[in-house]
Length: 202
View 1 (cartoon, rainbow, N blue to C red):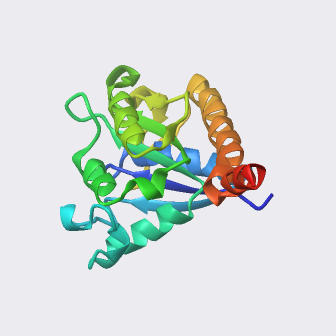
View 2 (cartoon, rainbow, N blue to C red):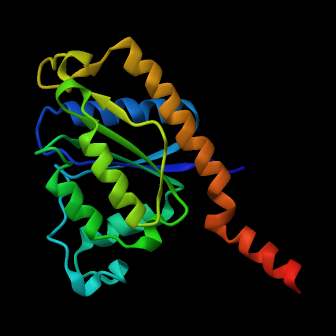
View 3 (tube, one colour):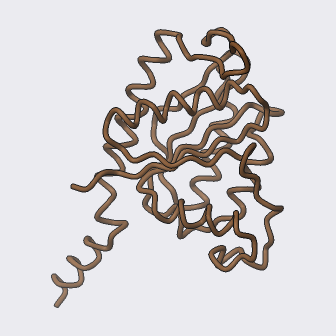
């Protein structure tokens, strides 16, 4: 099997950011399992307000950033969405980025959900789960939610560092589930299952 490709999208515009630190920890752990990780940080690579004219064909969007995001999402075997908790939900910049994409980018792909907020709240990932379902993605069963005390503070302008032992342990399960599901769903994404079924009918 060729290496699995994972796109990590961070929906925080704060610098430094706990959400970005969480996403960085996820990406580092994915890399140790030989996954090829691509990044989209919406603080550094913003996309324009979603245009409904391109709802069904985002690859034709006139904005280069949107077309690049579409291309990276198309190429991914799995996706990680990381967001801060804003008003009991996920961030608006992340929702807008998802609205720039279509079902084709997510169908039969596992999506790992991560968030940062008070008391390790799951509200952001719970809301994201509904959106992922609408995009025909497959949310993994283990969310990854953190709070401030799970990190060492940022030093010299860097990002905070995830250190909470129980969250680091949960990160292992998060990554394992994501990659196992990505491998299991790959035949559906490549059309192998569809071709096999057609051959049986003939």
